[in-house]
Length: 435
Image (cartoon, rainbow, N blue to C red):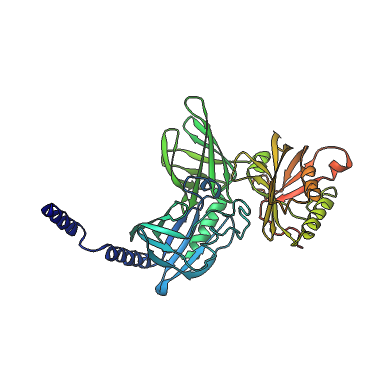
């Protein structure tokens, strides 16, 4: 037995010539050297949400540019949403030992913490489980090489890839070109064609995701949702997808001088089509704005009572936002949602039925969800609900190709019907009761 143990110890000494502390400190130093070694910084393809796909399909991918400097500082630049200007932020980072090197952005950075804050600055997912976009700001370094860094978000389990920023473009020009390309490529509806195979595709430019719906070889309907990030050539999917027996990792933009299309290396084409207004209405998030120019005389006093009812609460509350959209925690649920400041939330489930390309029927589903103190006085709250449900609405828009707003006009000849209309905005409207 002593000889056996002596042999095992000798083998262990040969296998690990340094102890665990020395090895992890060496790994931290090597990772820091790689991070600081990218002369022009890194391009991070960031995906918020959970590793099981709960939110990946909802939020899509984002591009962050970052450069790690001396004194443990990191400079970031990013472009969020569609047609938004880019912004810059400087904060601190730290590499700490855990099961492996852990990269943490340990002081507030408005670009990185945009994804992890429960109160998202743009109102995304406020009040839905108190996780915002379910992002992270701490990452386990799985691989650190000069040409690629692979991270895994500590809480959520997402795979995050960083590659060195190369080429002659400045960060600002790079983001500007991505923004311009997204304006050309990111639409709401497409048809995907690969030989005789076709799929209908709906998209959310705001959150960079595509949903492919098609019939497989067995005649069964299929639906595939995938998130992506944009680069200078087109879009790159979060993970390779299998479509009609082919593996697709990315799609590149082909400019025909007008709309153009996205094309795969396997010959498939993603061709934009004019969105169907009723489908677009049910698939995007639409925000209410309180003004006599944005709602009819039947709706306006009910929203005034909504405002006054919130203000009369103790403590007094203000409406943070109010929307019609799909409840992201449950893809089969759609309805009216609002959040208040101080924090509170309410939801009224609605069953939408598409009647035609520009007509929908909204029916009361009967379920109310939210914080009890927000919903304690139903009188003014339900008036909003009844004005929207058990009714048929005609939809119109400012731009059929790229709508910024949709108008809902209740059908009917009665005075209430004629004056029951709303203009809903694609842009987030925060604090809609403010001037």
